[in-house]
Image (tube, rainbow, N blue to C red; front, side):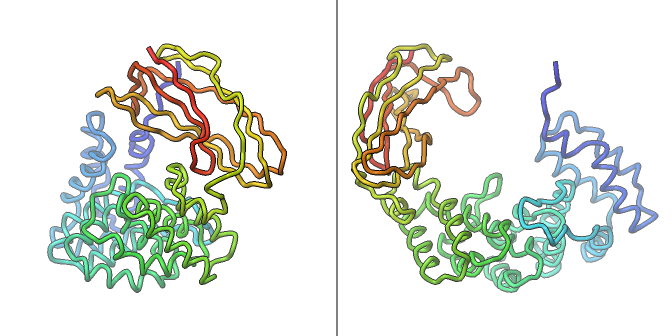
Length: 373
């Protein structure tokens, strides 16, 4: 049987730790590379991914100068060339540089703001420093936002992306920042017109975060950007779709309108039913039906399952089905198999009467009850 993939072992292992030690050794022949490597690897088997990052940063304390400005020079000296500037997307760099961000936070946050920001600007061109910048935003909000004014104009797109990604209100794995939801909007206004998808993807993800707090604000922002025309049409369309993906699932009227979907579609639904209405947790059923358009219509077809929760109440979850452009009189045959997985790590099913509904352009048009045992 093949071994289970381990992200922490893929990112942090003897080879990658050896690479990090090698960068320091090339910059400073007195660096004790083997001692550093042995100290880092000794407890690795017991450490999870984020713990490994923190541990590496702690071990570095014994191998860099206790004087932070001097240690900053040592870090600057060991950095390899920046990431390939000709790439446009999905170039996060090497995770092995993440511990350097932790080191900067620990030793530079309180008394070395400008030097720390200089380091993070350099480091993010090798690996994204979106997690490391957040403690600085909380401790020095006005000063960091002022530095971000210049970062928005930086010739390296990784630095520009740090402005959007580092200020996201709901960054996965990231600590919460004390910014107001509208504080970063002036930066997004600038960055949405960036020529690099790596930056515009971050902007769209940032808006998706905001949509969970103030949905109408996001629709207003995207509407304004479309009218300003500072981004290429196709890229602006992509940003809009990606930013509104959460609101579309919820059937938000403004989001659907902005994407060109009528919220009162003229369609008929017939024969919408499952192949059985009673099943066990761990089993699946197939539901099907027909959708007929009465006029030319752009349709976002989803299905919503109102799952029973542990307290006996239900909560809806939306699943994507189809995105189609239909002609008047055209009929679309729908069919989907849904597995009610047992023992999933992210979702637990509970027995009881549940409901599955067909949602078209955010509007529930048909549905049926079924029993999960």
